Image (cartoon, rainbow, N blue to C red; front, side, top):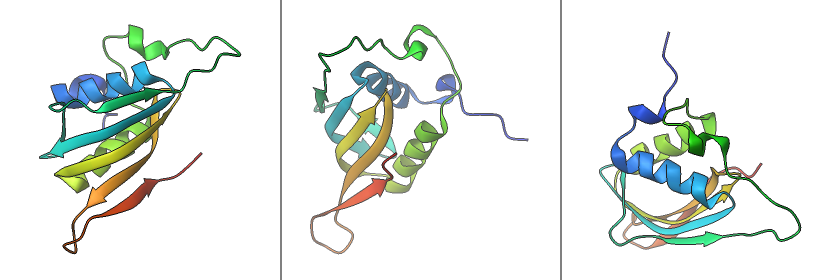
Length: 121
């Protein structure tokens, strides 16, 4: 039986990306470079937070934990990084600290185009 994937199982760069998603809570990460399936933070991606003013939204409870089991959405997101290997993620849409959708820049046929990966919930 496979053990569930935990934060501590990830590379430091992937842990940083999961923590970044949690800190954004609601919003997006734009222009994230990926090299050998790991996020690259040089140059640092643009972080856009969607702040609701009609209510207090607390942070993800996992932010206070040193380690935890990753959600299926995070696991699927990381699998997409494995498939991608290297390139640019134009946009990662984040809701409640979880990446829900991403736009990936691709040059598979020699031209620049965007492909939508993920499903809206």
